[in-house]
Image (cartoon, rainbow, N blue to C red; front, side, top):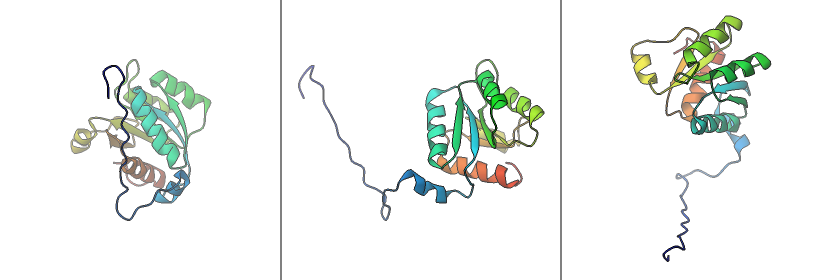
Amino acid sequence: SAPGAGTTFTIHFPLAAGRTPADPSANLGATSVAALRLLVVEDEELVRAVVQEMLTGEGHVVTAATEGRDGLEKFRAGQFDAVFVDRAMPGMSGDQVAATIKQVEPRLPVIMLTGFGSMMQAAREKPPGVDYIVSKPVTIESLRAALAKVVSGSKPG
């Protein structure tokens, strides 16, 4: 490295023992839920992109919205099997989005993404219109579990 020239690093991480790289379509067998049409309403760009990428990698068709009003417009214009909504968003909160969606489609599963998920679950707090709560940071396992519960009709958590 030299001043003003910068430095380039290449890092190689080993796979976990016994694992081999797989193509994204191999993930379909990892979930017990068939491909779904999903709406993700999340104002944080990075979180929205990560959730969209994880769900798309599972074989789902994902439509993303940048905030509550955008989410409701996309909801009204499309057909979805489930909706993921962030709780804390500027303008229109996730609570408001969930309640509005449930007024129009009472049987459509709504999954809330929130940094306060653990506290809400411990207090048994669930906003009206929300079927299941997923704590942030989200993982593929938590997204899978939420979809499996709401799609199967299990008691929401």
